[in-house]
Image (tube, rainbow, N blue to C red; front, top):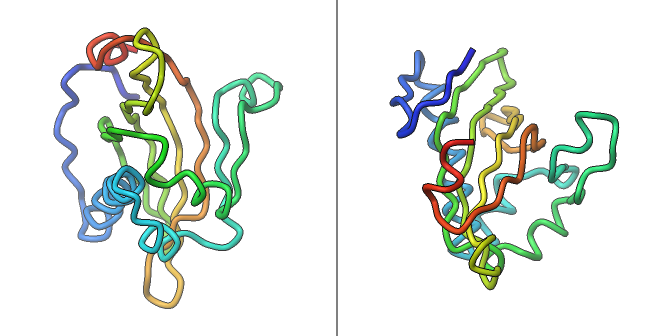
Length: 154
């Protein structure tokens, strides 16, 4: 069980693959912020699925569901910051599951909703010797606020 502390305790991967997956999580986030559509496409699958918002965990509809193409259409346009913390990696052979939180800034948002936090679960699979990102589910959030500090305690 994770108990939230801020700043997050350092993640200590147990294996080289865990270290690779944890680094890939942040690298994808950085590529999304920087508009690197080619990189994000190269590490996601054509059947990629992303579920935004947590209403689905209570039987409701998610805020948004993305395919690879709809997600790629917003790369470089949505976020000014996308930082991961509290990330853990769980390995199952050629499948890796990450869970954790990201803190983000939405470009053009109203000041009182500029920052948000999302707790997530992601799935990666190793295909042809290469890790690819196949799924993202928001499990808590988004939670909005005017500053990083305002959303860091949730």
